[in-house]
Image (tube, rainbow, N blue to C red; front, side, top):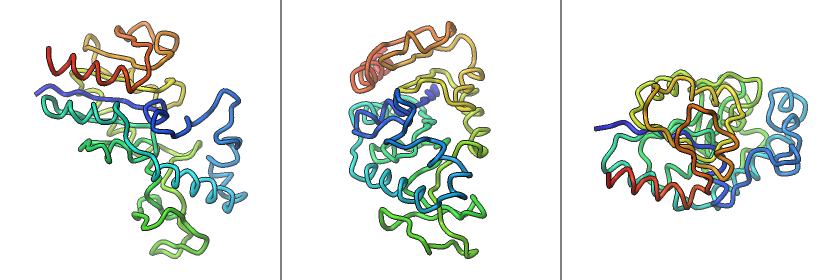
Amino acid sequence: MKHVVVFTGAGISAESGLKTFRGEDGLWEGYRVEDVATPEAWARNPELVQRFYNERRKAVLAARPNAAHLALVKLESQFRVSIITQNIDDLHERAGSNNVLHLHGLITLAQSSIDPRLTYPLERSEIRTGDCCELGSQLRPHVVWFGEPVPNMSKAISLCQQADIFLVIGTSLQVYPAASLLDVVPSGITTYFIDPKASKLTRSDVPICIDEKATVAVPWVVDQLCNR
């Protein structure tokens, strides 16, 4: 069974109503990234950071998987499918995908602020001041902030090296180290890049660019792969 590795970014979730990470004005939901997505921001103003991610979590819980998420589930009937996502939402899982690796964390989990290996499912949409891990430290969002290591990067590299078919969906390929995954994909395999600006964003070694939104292009590509 051939192995399809899928690398997704904010564009696939945008069509479910979730804002992309960084808008054209450089802000995320009206905030400077440096004020809500760095360890320094957490040290400086944990209440602001917590409030910001509590709002993002509420938006994620209200969102629903779209046609692109659902199409990727269909691939599992004929292929081994591994999804590597930069997104912190759980829409791939709720759509039904079985093998999802989150590079930048999962917002529906909390983690210890002193030991990132300690994570906890959330029973409500908010993490509150005073919610602590088993070591007594304040819980924080299970999100990899700028300036922090990406624990799942080595797993993602290994998956990419095993790919027979590679799909890139809804990412600008501007955030590193995640964008460097294209460097380890075996040369010569079928690679698709799906994004409204794919042909402007991609590199010369990505042979199939589809300048279209994910809900249109992903179901089409999945049908092509399943029927060929």
